[in-house]
Image 1: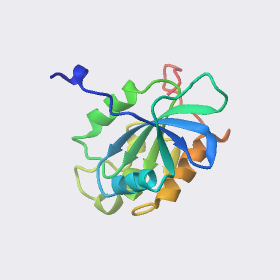
Image 2: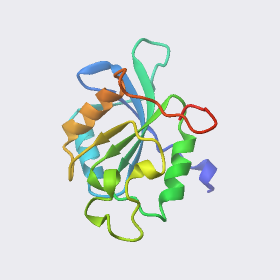
Image 3: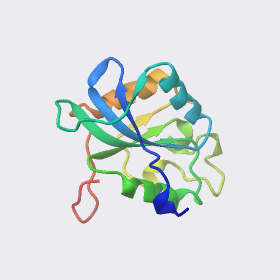
Image 4: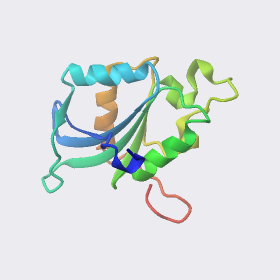
Length: 157
């Protein structure tokens, strides 16, 4: 089995209480914050969908969700995951470790925030953040104040 033959790791969700918001999430769950993402799903805050109708009204986006400590060894994988997401795509940093390195910030192998690798649209603070904070962050993605980023070539990121 090769990397190209593996099943997709992306999951599609409708956000409870916000039926117009549908997200495809590639969850890079690296530590304890990943449990809170699972709690959001089991609590019914994120409802799994078989497919997402991109033709209907509403906000549809691919989200790279980083939850946990990112080390320098994991950085290339995070960048590859970001590159594989379909447009429109946004990234969410979930928890203190993803945001800043958390309590491990002074370790020489810990990335001092995921924004050193990819553009982040929403930061969700906490150690760990509650599942409801994840939903609030996803809802925030659909608001006009959230900016998409451009790389130096001018392409939307």
